[in-house]
Image (cartoon, rainbow, N blue to C red; front, side, top):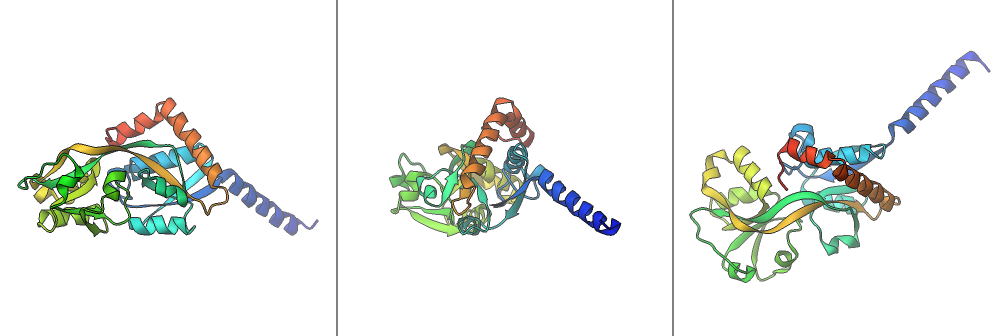
Length: 248
């Protein structure tokens, strides 16, 4: 065999083997949802670090693209991404996605202006009010099914907070941690005007959704679930929560 040909074959073998050792790349879609996840957060935020660690334990690398939420869900459904996260649980999602086991999230509820007097015992009590929601979000089963409520859609939570502050809507549905983070970072001048309405509607866990269009989707979820259980048992999950200041 000519020396030059042998050299080329050797380089190709090295390249091929290095790719095998590097493992598969899993392409996920998400949104900027600080403090849980976002490109400006340390290590991408709590959820991004969970994703990277769980897939690393299965010798896979994670690549996360940040998109408007409705687009992230649709593009994953269409097969442009292997999966998307972080999602709330909904039975309807199972038509198009394979859901992982849960990992910790936070309380979901309403924010309002402090000067607005609103109290309620049931969702029926909120009929008079305009409520900001994010397009494509899963909230709670009861709230999402409540067609009698006046829901005003926006592209993201920040837009809803701005609309709330100027009086275009009277309530918004938002994760408490996300809302308080936005008030501290993006809306400092108005932070004192807004409050979370206690009690929360629900304490929501988070999920990874893998598109059913992926041929090996169930295998990906099974491996991810095993890693999440392992991380919970060995204390890694709690360490990441503590590192990012996320309270369960």
